[in-house]
Image (cartoon, rainbow, N blue to C red; front, side, top):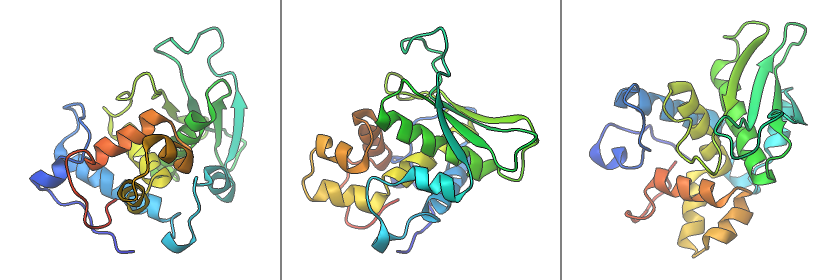
Length: 211
């Protein structure tokens, strides 16, 4: 599978989600291409099974994944609800990822992929006892988290890893309904619809593999 970097053109600009003005368009392109390269490190098209086993990827990277009550004292309706976090402690060689145990499984899968995005972007460039990233994005706030470069990278990486473009477009082309795609990729309806918006599925006809 050959992958071409996204070029600066009007048609390709349409597939990118709206972002805060603090991120320039050139930064968006750089981040998107970087996230694409990182996601493809784990995807060999002829050997992929879905849903993607993100837990196995974390294990291969020697990253521990734990569940816990991150949001003690608050409910899921609270805007400060955190779905996950990744942290490197002074006495550990590798970071650990903590997932909110009250989140549904599709949410946990996306959160884990999001946190792995943080690790892959920043590994080797963080100090001991540093919190590398939090995941605030959830189905109630589908646009949260995209307004800073590091969060945009983590979200983009998660979408590309869990729902690679070549498979996503194949599912659309075969007539799969959103509910079937949710089961196939192991993600929520909001995540499927957001991937559609990233790829501009609603308004473009895809004739070749996209990322």
